[in-house]
View 1: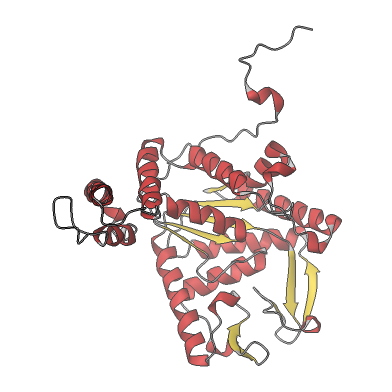
View 2 (view 1 turned 30 degrees about the horizontal axis):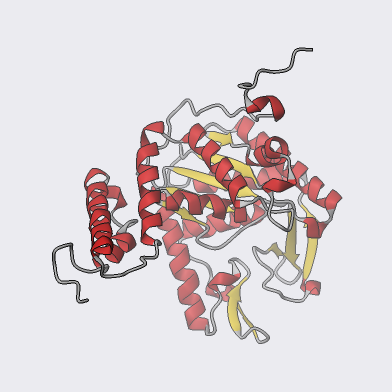
Length: 349
């Protein structure tokens, strides 16, 4: 058998998941995006933001199961959550809502109302203007509060006997996702929706229960995609589990994808859903943000002043060419304006 040539593609040694590029309309850099769901949605949202996309992710916090996603969208459409949902946890000295993540909990009821209200109103505005919605489900296991008789978004470390843990069946998960898409399209009946399944395995549930959970989610997602116009599937799960398929692509817990793995999924998402013409502005924004975190060895030196001046010019040019970046680059603009006088002015040293 003749050995492969030295220039043979690396694809010979892995299984590549084919992802067709969107044929209707690729997303432009300035279009607002909303991402809801698991911590994987959070990771992709952070990369969108780092590349200058006006993206909002998980305004009410991380959500894992289809029921919580549907309920979260209902809250965003309504623009608020009933204050009666707030509860006091004396052990943590916090007021919280079972409808939101613990990051919105606060020490006083008034502060918690303000926190939850602001997040919900912000999410309402973002959903109303979004050009595309990304929904990522992570688990079909749900926790139903016995007293409330409903699935909660977060248990907030409350006693386990308050909840019933149950696996959403395929039919129930499908119905919840179907309803979630319908709710999301309250403001725009043709809103594009991209469904994904998180590649993170929830080992705390056990190997077999985790696999059953993912199987239910995959079946539900594809049922909704096949029956609903304008809803597509992005194979984030398959990219990590089937294409990368090696523990070197995972963090030390061997469950969460590494930063390099998420970067790879993000690049594949760009190729499938975003305009190639915007690759340049994405790259420039990332470079500018990296420059803003650069530690200057000799602040006030001629070299430091010249570096800051070059970055101010880059910010000004980007804002002229891409006005939608104005609020997204405000922190970088202020950072380089505070870096001291332009070259040629007294440095103070």
